[in-house]
Length: 153
Image (cartoon, rainbow, N blue to C red):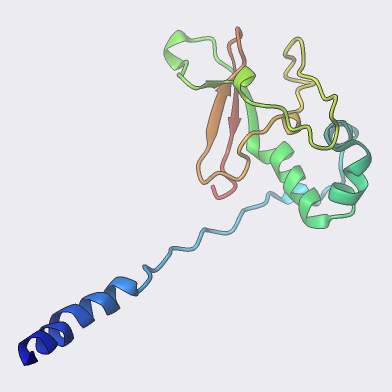
């Protein structure tokens, strides 16, 4: 009996104590914002927000300084639309048509019939804007790529 008790105390107790300790998590770096997020919204940005948030834009975006700052950062600094002409530079990635619409606020939100980089509204889509790494999507049947940079870069 003493051997069993000694075994439990010497071997199993330390194993169970160390097994329950949580591993130290490395905190995420803070999101970095460009200086241009301090500037007021442009008319185009305002219209993009209104298109996606509709009647809820004031409540969820315009009256929420953190959300507004995050959207400005996204539209101004983190989304890049690149046209690739060289076949060797093309990458295999997801298609824009595979990304669902972000339509909880405006139920009748529609995809664009024709892609135009100057009028494209990335807020309309359920991109993973807060992923740890960058992501890329090809616009179907075009040589355009949408690159979403990580907020931690």
